[in-house]
Structures are given as structure tokens and as C-alpha cells.
Length: 383
Image 1 (cartoon, rainbow, N blue to C red):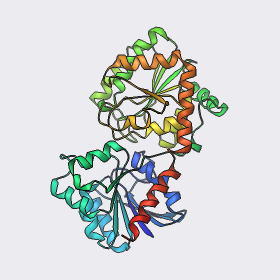
Image 2: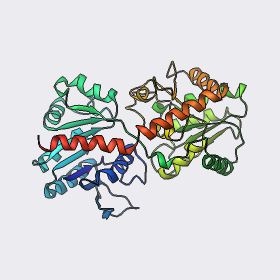
Image 3: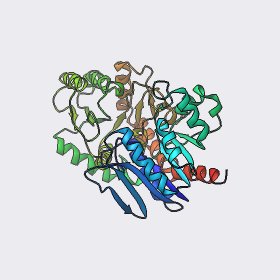
Image 4: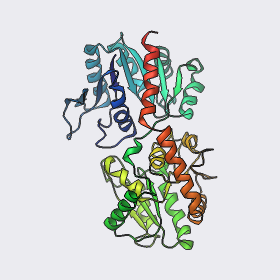
């Protein structure tokens, strides 16, 4: 079938600036392309051509000046494309424009965030979208329930398809290759041989990095060689500083030099190595996170996970033995307890990491994600 994948308008595909949706599309395209003729629509970027065909996949990147302009330009392309399936990512409020542009198509909507919240889409828009779309795909049961709870008639049309990674891109931390990566990164940043607590995040209060920094003050009292490395920045591709970033940097002054490292923005393809350099991974989400994809990346690298029971995060940790869910998501003392527990119990930490790696290899990988998406395409082809 001829299939259009319509990315959200903020970042391009491939994910040269990062972005969970962009990484998702890049991950599933090689598998979908084996059975379908694909066109991927995204925003233009100075590093990428506006139009090209790579490995048989057509990429159309539109130079839009605004969200509305992006929707209009993609709609124009859809109207001429005669696509059998149009797969929209994270933009139900734009659905009607795409639907009007290509009325002969069947539509799939993938949700990576809580896009049916009342402050994001009106009742009329939401009802039209959920009635006209053939399938809604969510990244977690948490997001699935947010749709069904607000619009009960959608029940039965919404399906959770957990995201994934390419495990082959990650070196599990117990391997010789990972040890070489760890030494290279520690040498690059001039840090010692202590255990490395890793946070990969955007700098936002809702991501909770300030709590991890406060927790490290307590951890260092007992384990003074421990190092906290924070990989990321305020926004994709930028090291912009705002009030929260300044607050985080000020908190870090309480940590001895060389025991906290801020890398700034790291391109997505290089971030993979940082996972292999860690010993413990933390996701400190304070908001109702849909389900942060960094959990899958930490699993693939064989890292024990410390996370919060916010939104969908716990769905890939609770009951699986691959990490710890902190009792109170907004208590730095609970993060300190979890870090110290894993430092005190290295065999338990290793076992958690190995379970996570096995889960990434067997379930949370792009091949499985693509198979589920293709099942959906096949089911709606003749309906």
C-alpha cells in the first residue's frame, strides 16, 4: 500500500535534532518499507534536503513558517498523493485538514502525548477525529486511558503499541566494548573511576533533574567517588539558558567539582554511547509522562533503572525486575535511597540491567513495533 507518515511539525526526520516521534519514525521505516511504499513528511532543516529518496523511502520536508503553514503544505501534498493510508503523529487537532485533503485515505493516529486533554483540543474537533480515524495508537496504557476516559465511544478503537529501540546500537555495560566507551567518555570529561549515575533529559522542571542533584548531595556522603552525569540541554539542538537551567546550575555548586558533569546538547546518534558509560540510569519525571522512551534506551544498554510512577513510566518497569520505582516522585530523599541501594547491591543492579537488556532484545525493539503497526494497516485495509 501507499502510506504517508506525517510527523509533527517541530523537528525533522531523520532525527538530526532529536525528538521521540522522529526517532520512532526512523526506527520503524526500514521494516514498513519492506511491505509498503512510504512517504515521510516532516519540517525542513538546513542539514537535510527538502526532498529526497533514501533506501526506497520518499522524504518530503516542507519549509513551513508556522504550525498552520506546515499543516497547509502537507495537506496540499496529501491531496495529490493518493495515499491508501495516512498515519498522523501526535496532531489530532490537525486531523480534519488532513482528512479533508485526502478523503479517500484511511487514517491512523499515533499519540505520544496526552493530546486529547481539554486544553489541547476542543470537544467538536476531538469527536470528529475519533469518529473518522480508523485506529488510534498510543505509546502507553496511560495515554490510551486518557482518550477513552474523555471519549468512551473511542473504546475499542484505541490500541497501545509500546515503543522500542535498536538493541544492536547499544553496548551492554558489562561488555568489553562498553568498558572502552566508558573510559573514553570519562577521559573526555576528565572524571574519575567512581560509579556513574546517568540522567539523559531536557532541562525542564517537569523532568526533575533538580531532585537528582539534591539526591547526589546525600549519596556523596556515603559514596564520595560517585559521579552524576547529566546529558542534555533546554531544547533539542540548543544550549539555551533560562531561569530553570540557571537554577539547576546553582544547585550543582553544592556538588564537589568533577562529581557532576553537564554535557550540554549531544546529537542523538552520539547519546547512545553515554548510556554504555553509565552504571545507574535515572528518569525523574515529575509530570504525567506518556512513557519516556529513554527507559528503552537504558534497557538496551543494560542499565538498572530508577524511575517515577508518573504517567506511563512504570508500565515497563513495575513487576519486571529491571529497576526501581521511587515511592515519592517529588522527594529527593527517595532518589538518594534508590541510588544508594543500587550502589550497595551491585549484583542486584547487574541482574536488573540484564533483565532490561533481555526485554529490549525480545520485546522493546523496532521490529516488534513495526509488526504491530503493520497488523493495524492490514486490519484497516479492507474495512
